[in-house]
Image 1 (cartoon, rainbow, N blue to C red):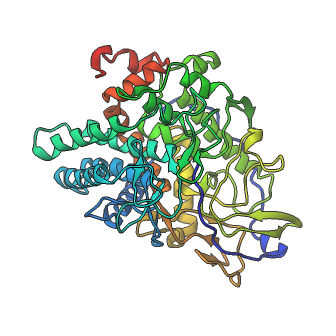
Image 2: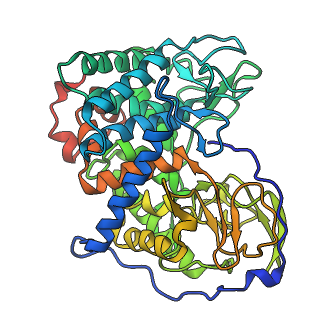
Image 3: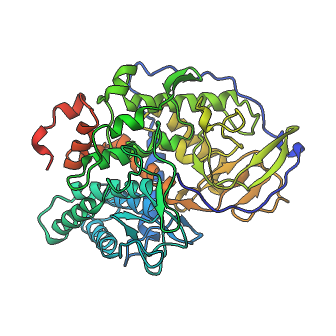
Length: 493
């Protein structure tokens, strides 16, 4: 899981908190009996949101290297996960005619070739990665490891979601598209998933030259689905049989806010793998035993988060039926303040969330400090459009240009922080709207672009259904049914 630097300190009094703090009483909607049909107004906003967010990747990414920003306008380093989302965004831009296919292909090849040529090795300095994996953050000037960050298995996996999407999307015969497929294949085949295990068959979270493999492994339901699918699909250094089952072994299936599902608190855990993999109608042994697929699991988690916002047990301002969504995002500060007569620990970057997962809770409570991230609702749009569309519209109309600007929605906002005298290092405080972050974050921009497209055309899902490595990984994990059964078994190579 990703960690970020702090946003400074901030003080706020209890009197500030109560403005606009009435609790809503709207009940969470039952599953739609008929398909949801968005209004013309909602679709128009969706198009605007998607194009502006796409242009964040297209216009801010370095054209000579393909290194996408971790965040912008602050520019400290590139994030390899953000690069994966950028590689996913370019074909979407081409399909929507915001750029040409040739432009998308050229940018993609520049990116892949740059990644391929970065030095790999165990040395502490001047390396881009090791064993085919990449460091979490890379320096802009040369693509090497930023300071002492870890070699990240999850951020590498998110990068490879974009790499394999590019491999399958660019299927033309011209030299650029042929080269894209070849370099993408080489990058993927180079990853040594077997090296990433120190306690087989689970995958370690990270490695660095200072401490070597981390003590923590990916286990229990979270964003690591894509790690295991990619690792099981490898033709060169695959994960062993049983890896998927070992990851599933500590899942927590419980009913939270009226929704029985496998719990994980931040919504990014229910979104990231679904950006590239269509889990609708396909089931592994675990989901089959629960009588649902993983897509339905994410839908229930989304509904539960909205119900949490409606109940609003923390009494935070702004929460309600159309303002909801907790995930990893920026926040106001790292400090303890008094809100409504109680102490609240505010956070800067933090994995916020709501579920009944005891591991993810803080002192028995949900991971919440009043901060909402637009990507949480919009990235969940394919799962529950009947609640995600109204949330997108409400955030746009209620908070205006303070929140929605040149490149779409800013990363996060906190309506409980309304004192304009509060000093913040990043973001602004509006007396009517609260704290609004300054930056756009690549790992939050990415699900907005991609999941809007999956809802609108299923482009990423349909493309990845024909990727041989994804097919092999899913089958080795035990998935059957739906579109997977109708895909030729011999299509994996």
